[in-house]
Image 1: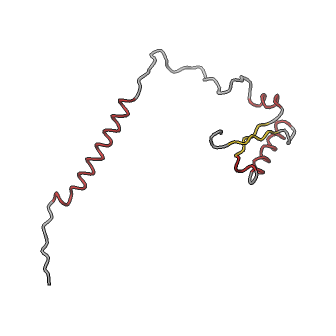
Image 2: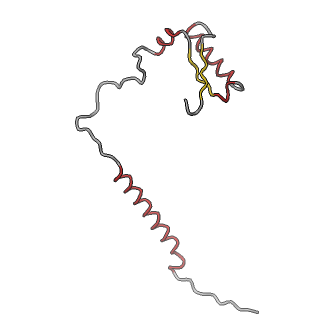
Image 3: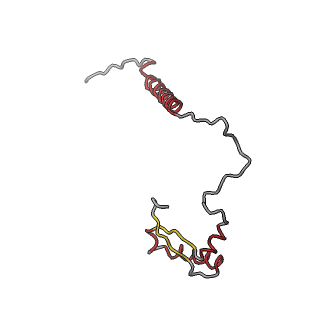
Length: 119
């Protein structure tokens, strides 16, 4: 029979993976923070400050949305291409019900096929 003799394990052998991984994490955080701080552009306009005036709406038309839809006389409904044939019935019915409430005509809708890229 072969006898195997144990070798004593030092403190360094037992804990070096913890120390090395901690140092690596610290260096990673340090490099990340440095990259963020030194690549950030500091374009600050001194005269720009908080304003009491409301920001402009994203639409170019200054009228209320309800007024725009009533003047157009139909509702535009964007429905995902993949569900127009299969599950689009629910979405079209929802658009019809909104059209019935706003315009008085449930058939006053335009279905616009959309994809994830064109949403």
